[in-house]
Every structure is written in structure tokens, then in C-alpha cells.
Image 1 (cartoon, rainbow, N blue to C red):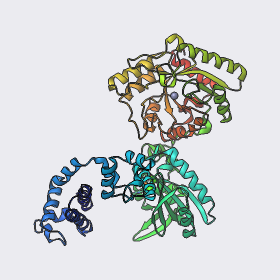
Image 2: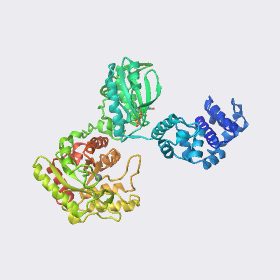
Image 3: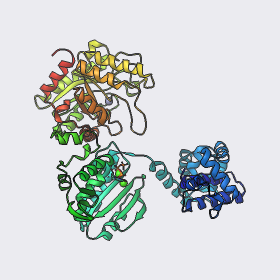
Image 4: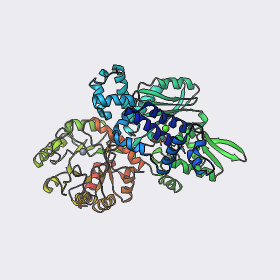
Amino acid sequence: MTNSRIADVFDEIADLLEFQGSNPFRVRAYRNGARIIRDLPESIKTVLADKQRKLTDLEGIGKDLADKIQTLVETGELSQHQELLEQVPATVLDIMRVPGLGPKKAAVLFKELNIETLEQLKAACEAEQVRQLKGFGAKTEQKILHGISIASAANERIYWAEADTVAGELRELFAGCSSIEQLELAGSYRRGKETVGDLDILVVSQDVEAVMNRFAEYSDLAEVIARGDTKMSIRTHKGLQVDLRVVAAESFGAALQYFTGSKDHNVVVRGLAKQRGLKINEYGVYRVDGDKEIYVAGATEEEVYATLDLPCFPPELRESRREFDWASAGELPELISEADIRGDLHMHTHATDGRASIEEMVAAARSRGLSYIAITDHSQRVSMARGLDPKRVLGQWAEVDAMNRRLGDEFTVLKGIECDILEQGGMDLPDDVLAQADWVLASVHYGQQQSREQITQRLLGAIENPNVTAIAHPTGRILNRREAYEVDIDAVFSAAAAYGKVLELNANPARLDLNDIHCAAAKSHGIPIVINTDAHSIEGLACMRYGVLQARRAGLTRDDVANTRTLAQLRSLIESGRGNS
Ligand code: DGT
Ligand code: CA
Ligand code: CA
Ligand code: ZN
């Protein structure tokens, strides 16, 4: 246990006691203890391990505190602490930590308004109940609301798509800063990771002050966390941290390489450098010559990698998975790009839970440069979305036929359906109906809590059905909100490969399902991936890029993705999945 962790426990005891209205002297004793421990120049663990020494020899530590520290280090807990945690609801601790609040104010909120959770606190602020309490006011109420939004967001990784919005705003902000010579976003954002912890910006400029002043003007800035000579960090109102670093031009490529990461990728890079008598850090590549280090590269990423005879890896591949093997074999894949996509094969209309008509979806897809789409509304089981029964789906397909006659050869709408895989197994629509579709997605929406065995059997049943073309969002996960259901994904891959089925990479930024690792595994089974937006509006069609980014992280090329094919090629793929090839 580190000093700071020990101090945290003492501080928490003080908070909990204060919340309960305990004797102020007791509270102060614990707070003092926490401060003393935190400020100790030596690790408490080292002192305890040394038989020659006693904790009480340390400045400020008396017998009582020493005993408590010893118990805490030896047993990992303190009975006082455990008892308090049982008496006070755990969610109250979150309330105490909202900026502007503390144990005393949290106690008032609890006594007067029965507030135990951040949600309740937020609701009470919004209902203007908090300002009526003694010691609070309208201003405090506003401060609390703001504090809650930061506190609740601070620990969560955000979707790549949200990070991208902030990145776009920051690019725009800095576009108006004339002293900036180069600017790039690095980190997990640049690698296209599905969620982003914080944003990392690198800048070359002769005028650091001007750049930082500009940064401080960002409209979404909630607080400046730190501002130093070359680095500045801020937090946005939604709790996202953004780190800005100003670097020299001759180091820009090295810094970009370093801060793009991933850490694991960079560990390999540094190791390869060492083998060649080189040293790589965020400032450059150096030839080590005795005790001299001579700069050899660093202005661009290309030249940094070139010193190791490596290609400038696409950032999406820098995860230390297979990229180094590919590079040494000269087999780095030519990653898919959004321009390769010809169609979108999962979308909803206002017949179920979408917002637009077929006609509007067609127009929007055409203006995005696509040449075919599939309309895939929900089937009847999804009653909340007014899912289609056989009669309605056949009616919709007649509409699609009529639409295709009007469109001629320019554009094609496939007659599709997103058909539920029922809880007890089997498809939600009869086979004679499904057989009339061009494109059938099968989805698990209900019974996601079932056993691994049950869910796997349901999916295998769908894969074996000759009318099913693809499995949509095959694992059911929702980022930050819902874990994937239990499923034997290898069994799904084997079956999909055997039956010639397609698996979806759902491009919705909250889903991205299959994920990158699963997409790469599917590819190794020879299973085509279809990247679909699952759009519920015309704007939803823009999600394609998130799916493409994920596919790139999986190392997929154009050939690995079903909807890069021409319509004729796609149709023959569908036929082979029906066992008709
Ligand atoms: P995130 O922000 O959690 O989504 O993930 P990253 O990858 O953006 O991580 P971050 O922001 O902590 O750092 C950005 C990059 O900087 C990271 O991918 C590699 C590099 N880096 C940061 N700290 C270290 C470190 O302590 N050692 C090494 N080798 N590299 C680091
Ligand atoms: Ca980061
Ligand atoms: Ca960072
Ligand atoms: Zn859908």
C-alpha cells in the first residue's frame, strides 16, 4: 500500500465522520494523519519492513496513528473505515466529491432533501430545491450542476465519434492562430480506437504563449488543469481532458510517433532502435556513440520509421498485434477506406423506428455516392418499434420493387429485413416470407441474458437458415453501457464460414460490433464483413466512417468487406450463402 493510498483511507474516514456530524476533533485527527502520511519523504512500507525502525520515529506520527497505519498495511483495511462505509450509502461519497460540495453540505442535502445519489442531486438542482437550503444559493446550485457533469463524465472514456467532434472544434480554433506551423492530433484518437480517454494535440509554433492563450479561449473549456512551458491541459464541460504539447519542428515527427502510441507498439519500436545502436524518444532518433547522442531524424514520422527500415504504419495498426510481422514480410495490408464502400445494407425507415421514408433514404444514400442500399426494418417481435409482420413486410417490398423500376440502373434498393432471432430459437418471420427477400439480417435483441449455450444455439440456428444472409451486431455490446452477451464466438465464426454467411460490423459509434479483434478473427476464417450504418435517419448514414475506421484497425482491405463489391458481385455472394452457388 502506497503512502497516498493510506492517506486516502484516512481522508475518507474524516469525510464520513464529518458527514455524520462527529466530534470535530476526531475529524481533524484523521485529516492531520492523512496530510502527514501524504507528505512523508519515505515510503511507509519501507519503514515497516525495517526491523530497526518504528513508525513513531517519523515526524508527526504518534502511537495511535502508528497502530492504525500498521493495521491498514497488514490487513488491507481498518475496522473504523469499514463500519463507516456500512453506515453511509456509498453514493454519498460521490456527492461529497462534487466540486463546491463537501461532507458538511452533503449532510445538509441528505438531511433536508433525502439526497443520496448524483441523479437525485441533479434533479433537485434542476427543480431549484437546493437554492432554498440554508447556506446554499442559486449560484451554488449552478456550480453543483456543473460539478456533477464533470464528476460523472471524468472517469468515462468517450466514444470516438464524440472525441472527433471536439477534435474538429479544436482544429477550427487553432486554424485562427497564425503562429502555428504544424498541428496534429495523436493518441488513441488518431489510432481510431472505439473509445478515447483523452485527446493529445501536438503543435509546432515559435509563439507558445499565443498558442496557449488561444487554447484557453476554447468555448467548451471548463477548467485549465495545468499550464507549463510546453504543455497545457484542459478539461471540457463534458469532462474530457485535452493535452496540448508544443514541440520543435525537428522533433515533430518523433513526438507524433511517440504520442500516437500505442505504448505497446512503441515498446517494440524502441527495442528495434536499440538493436541498431539508436535511441528513440519524443524528441528524435539519436545515434548513440560512446557518451554522445547524435540526432539523426525526427521532423517527420516517415523519417523516424525509416531509420529502422520500417514503413510509416497507418496509426490504426499501431497496437503491437501483427503490424511488425506484416512489415518484415512486406505484407502490410492496404487498408480499406470509405471511398471503397459502394452500399449500405442495414437501415430503418419510418415504417418501424426510423425517421425517414424509403425515398428519402435513397436520395440521401445517392448523394453520399452509394449505388445500392438495403432497407432492413425490424420484424414483428420488436413490437416497441412497430416491427413488420408478414403482411406489412411484403407490402414494403412491393414498394421497393416499384421504387427500383423508377430508379432504373442508376441505383438499387435491396428488399431487406432485420429479422429477430427468437428467444426460443428460430426466426421471427416464416421462411416462405424470408425467401422473398434479397437480404436478410438476423439479430438477437431479446433474451440477451440467456446462457452462452442458448445464445450460441440461437445464432447457429440463424446461420444454418438458408434465407439468412448476415448476422447483425453479432455480440450485442453497447459501449460503456452493456457488455456483449455470452456467446461462443468461435463457434459462430466456424458456422458462418461453413455456411457462407456474412458478419456485420455495425458502424454505430456506440456499437462498433463486431469489434476490431473479432473482425480480424472473422477475416482469418475467410468470412466477409459487411460494414453497415444501421441508420435510423438520413443523418445516420454518416456513421459509415466509424465502421471503416474500426475495420482498418482490424487490418481489413477492400476485398475483405462485402459492401465494397459491385451489386452483381454482392448478389452472387448472397446466392452462395443460400447454398445456390
Ligand atoms: P487514451 O487517452 O487512454 O485513450 O489512450 P492513449 O493511447 O491516447 O494514451 P495517452 O493519452 O495516455 O498517451 C498518448 C500516447 O503517448 C500513448 O499512446 C503512448 C505515449 N505515452 C504516454 N505515456 C507514456 C509512457 O509513460 N510511456 C510510453 N512508452 N509511452 C507513453
Ligand atoms: Ca489520449
Ligand atoms: Ca494524454
Ligand atoms: Zn437495425
